[in-house]
Image (cartoon, rainbow, N blue to C red; front, side):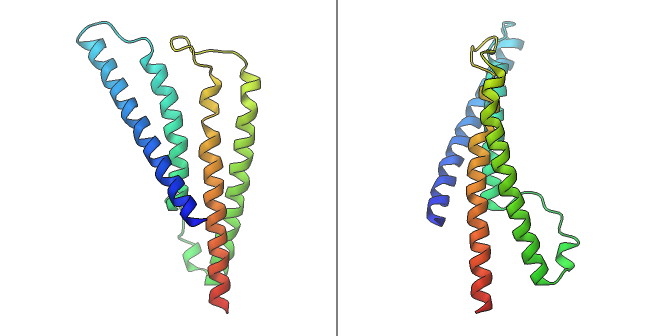
Length: 159
């Protein structure tokens, strides 16, 4: 399972890097067209908005894989190790529930948003909200893996 997560994370990083490059080139092109040629690109802002949403939610999954989300550990570090273990496990369970609920809710948004399209690109607006699904779904897989490793490492230490 760990090998699967590592390969999946590499793929997500490549996709995120590609999105970032496309976004930077698009915004740079917009600046050049607007200020040097006085003819702004109509579609660049919308494309950047869509790409940014996908980039952010893929970044959530990368941060979950690396366990690099912000943590406030001032009080937790002062607790006994057994309580730290249970708090960490509980927080991972809450994260899994949150990721699944948000993913499920995001899947329902296209029905609500209907056929509303972006003005310049003609891409449906639900493409913004659906960007949450891969990021949070993959994050739930990573968190389940972390929870499993947390549990098995704890079990080995107690043997």
